[in-house]
Image 1 (cartoon, rainbow, N blue to C red):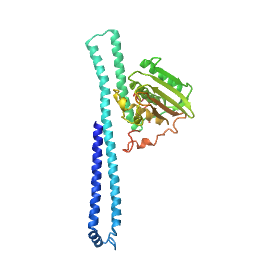
Image 2: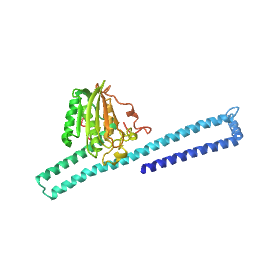
Image 3: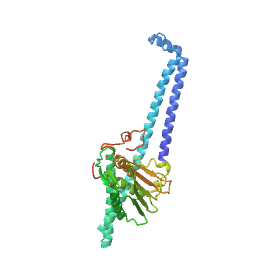
Image 4: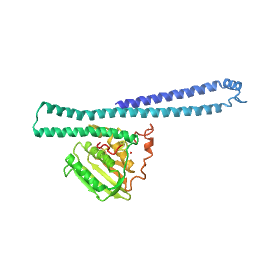
Length: 347
């Protein structure tokens, strides 16, 4: 609702500015036609040339060019205004999301601590309380690290150290750790990984991107988790895919989900939690590896597949960055744009 009101207000303002501009042009034309002889005599007195201001069409042409630049200036200002308004709204939504993400684990920690202080629970309950408290602290740590990592990505402060590794073997170990952590069952988790794929990557940072993709699949599968991970080689690249059966992504939102602070749309908005940072972080890290990440979904309720394509030889140079990084802060673009070797994990 707030976004609709802001759009209508800016549109009305733009229309009023253009009506005022057209009125000014009409007034100028009317005045010039009715007072051309007076203007010409004045111009002769000020020695603008032997013919004064010249024939009327010269005046109209010059003034028309001036009005055209004025119109372009209005359009540029309006574009800046719209982008800034959208950015302000994204910041407000981000603050609201972060506040919720912080309050939930803090409230849980406070409840368990008060219970431990007031009561003397049995050893089994005490262990369960401590386990939940540890999960909440990990959740808080992940959120804080993600916020700090985004700041580093925006300022190009993330450092990468590329080396050739067996990506398949690392990936299998990584997914087994995730399976143990979340307790995935055999019918929920499937892998199709070629183990001997050699790729030049920064595994510590790439793992951050994978964490955010996996956590995204967990978060947006409210009706039951299911994940299939595959890795294979295509020419000079390897393709890593994460397929889930979650809420899916509408076609009109698939080009926006990697923008900073963006949180899905449609059915994805109904899922509680999230800050809109995870996929932005994933895309930034994958791009720093010289690769790209793309979503595929047939629509809401039909699941999503994220494809990560990485060159086997790694990025073309150590200082490689995509050109759009340098222009990502401009208001004409969507809001998106390698510190430490201990980056955040999580979505």
